[in-house]
Image (tube, rainbow, N blue to C red; front, side, top):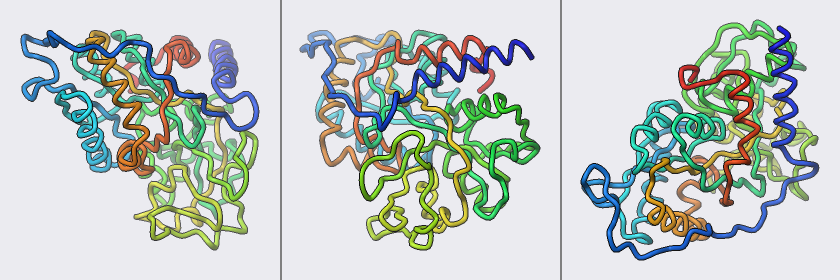
Length: 360
């Protein structure tokens, strides 16, 4: 118990360090990677086959945090943009879990690039040296949060009220959907009851909506406000006086009056357009470092530099919003360059708590 308390106290300190320092985080100017773009006279080979050819395409891996068909369709748009920009061939895939994504990157270290969350990146980096290149920016924030969802008409008012209740989460490898909420519950001394592995963030929210679980944990992104920007410490949910106006617009966005919903409930709007009226946010956690685009540890540096340059250019195009920038995909409104050191807080948590792939 003493060890757990020490770990959890340090966890709180580390996450505060990872979160914003007051007010809404600002998105720093994006600077292209320093590695130069070079003309490749001899393209590196993997297994005796030239990398980036139709016979040996670069593997682009996405974790299954939302509907797989949405990821694949958006990934194909990105694939086309990268192929046009670099002249190389790519293959998009969505492994069956977060752990499977990491395993594939380590099994093919010289030809994989993966869109993986912060905790997954730390595990992959520790396991085989996977290296981060970019981090997500969502509406100006380069950190994100986890949220606890409960039925709107329930009497639950704090995390203490969740003791013994059934818990729906996306995947045990999800940073915001499982790992950070688990440690938050431990810190609060709350032990949930039965668990439901829902398979994705919108599915976890829908489990509460349909009554299949008492509460759920998913990613949280602040709503777009009528005026100004949301700041950490502000109420996380839509004001109750606007709930009656919640609806899906002709542009296929979820709005409640002048507030646009951007958390995981918005991803479930097709199945449950009234989900905000039926499911509320009980609490959110401290800020979590945003998810990453990372490369296998033996990925050829000259090809990597080409891809990084192409992705920065792609992020400035309208097609970006139909791919990873789509709110039903990963919702990256921009990308910033990232360093391994930015994930040291999560790395220390992994080391102290002893999380590894077996836990995923």
